[in-house]
Length: 237
Picture 1 (cartoon, one colour):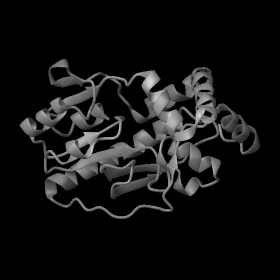
Picture 2 (spheres, rainbow, N blue to C red; picture 1 turned 90 degrees about the vertical axis):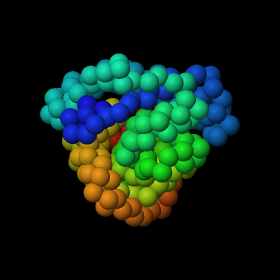
Picture 3 (cartoon, rainbow, N blue to C red; picture 1 turned 180 degrees about the vertical axis):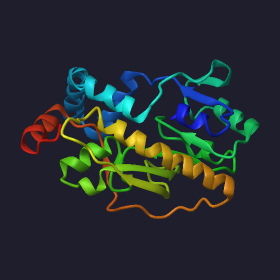
Picture 4 (tube, helix red, strand yellow; picture 1 turned 135 degrees about the horizontal axis):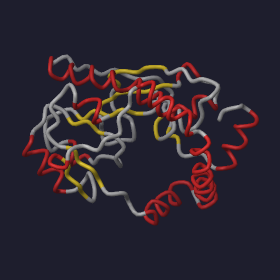
């Protein structure tokens, strides 16, 4: 996302938060979902390392097709923090006062951070919201035979989980050679021009949000059992 945007807009800073501890994430998931589900999710995450290798060739094809670039942002504009919700991030935002803040792949942004400047926070979500909030929205849409809503959303960030007003949405079209690890590449490629348009709307003063596609539901990582069941019963890879 950074490389796609940097060619068209001035990026004042890139804030990179350190990866949360695995132990803390597991404890949080257990409180939310219970041990049985979390163990199944951890089993799938381990299995997905093999799956990602099997889908590597297709991933490389899509990266080349879409011209996606993974070069790191310049060191002089990169700020590394323990959390996007830290006091240091609020101080930086107040100092820079950017026209907009683009959020990509962070933990949930707190209300304190969102309210520290009177500017829009914009996020690209790999799913059609609010029907597919959370993670792996494209995968879950295909599992539920809902290809019409297999896509990507650019939305305003609020204190909820992918609950902010929708700016743009786009359906993606996957192919037989795609799978769990390549759906997000289609979504990223479709989401980049949507984010660019949203930033142009900010500059032009035309940023307008709307309701998304319901009903609203929050989705999580599949368990290994779920993935294998849907792989063979519904042919979703």
